[in-house]
Image (cartoon, rainbow, N blue to C red; front, side, top):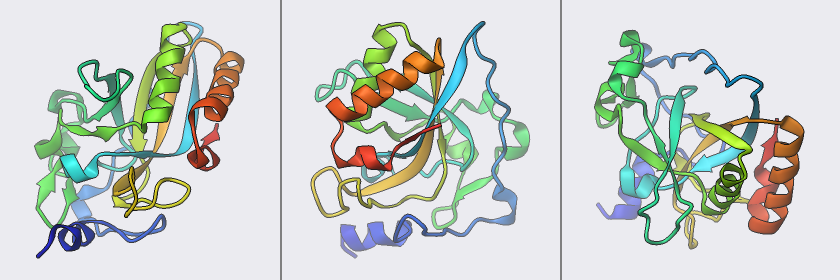
Length: 201
């Protein structure tokens, strides 16, 4: 079986694609992380996690994952990795939740592992906000199954396409007004058509 065919067996076909879940894999609804004194949360909806073709890990839906810098990335100094928390930070009742029925992969198997990356243009904006002291924390929540990339993100067969995981990014910021202003300006200067998929909540 060639690679393209094999990949298509692992993912849903579009933004509304569904994937089967075992009865034991209902996602936890993690409590909101406490914010620093005076901090507020801003959400970017409509985003995607990239890199499924490389990492081949499906995250637990509706689960807060860490977003951390990848300073040694030779292609992008602003690269941001999306990482599952270590097993000790995941409630024990979810350790055996199945995230990939075909391969029999559970949360226990992917705990502490890299899921993928924040799209490059968005990572550049977030790095700038961090440098300016506006962004003080960042988490990611997968909102749908891995699926072929869809417009306005690059199409699956084009450069920068492939397979993506729909998600929301949760930003801990010092000022909502300033953060929203910086995000909107960054969308215009650093993003292409994909900016149309993003909503600031």
